[in-house]
Length: 302
Image (cartoon, rainbow, N blue to C red):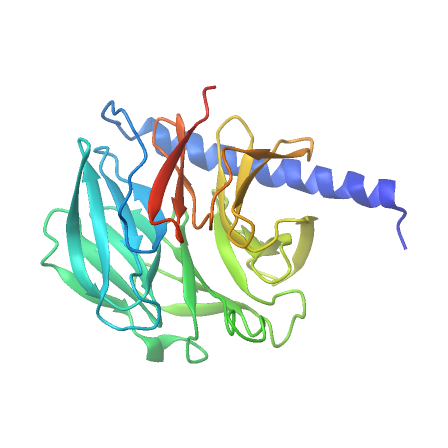
């Protein structure tokens, strides 16, 4: 068995590689997008906000679960020029959000739905429950790579045994491939937040049950331990400076991890920090506080 210092060194090296690869993707995406200048302040009165994403025009989309387990009462709200309004309704338990082209993709309980950003009346099921390898239990986070592929985590029996999770890849045609199954790999319990590299070869994910940050090789299925101690790990994002941010839903915390592997808490104490995201100008870390019904903004320039 490796001693602790050597194991730590290997983790830091792997983490540095993951972050460096993500930086390439982040920089490439930013170079093609224009962000409208905005002043962001905390948004209140939301109905169990879970995920958030900003479009290139500056609009911020928020998934609101409302009552857990009640179909049809979920919605997507949009924050535009400081004004909050409902963008699309009729979701079940909408969670992870990602934008590809003109479409907003939503992980909605057991299926992936997409809505046209220019016309919310164009709402359709992109991947039905029947398309997955196993009947989905708790579709959670969504991620996209620069090649146009989607990745979705199924957190399994997250509210019960805390096991049974899977991670899937979805190509542009909506074809689903299972990448890793918790039934075959005991490290994979309730995968939640996802972060893809610029090639789609590596996928970083945080597990809600174990609070461990892992790296998944999407071609071999190999899972490597990157860092531990994130409680109820929820969201994972990266900044072009090389810093990763991880949210802890259970303990209401947000952590930063630099390229040396140093972990610190950032921002205030939350009730339930859910699926975080970074604004296009990289000034703010957006934090949905599910239990408080709020969307907070941590100024990363301070």
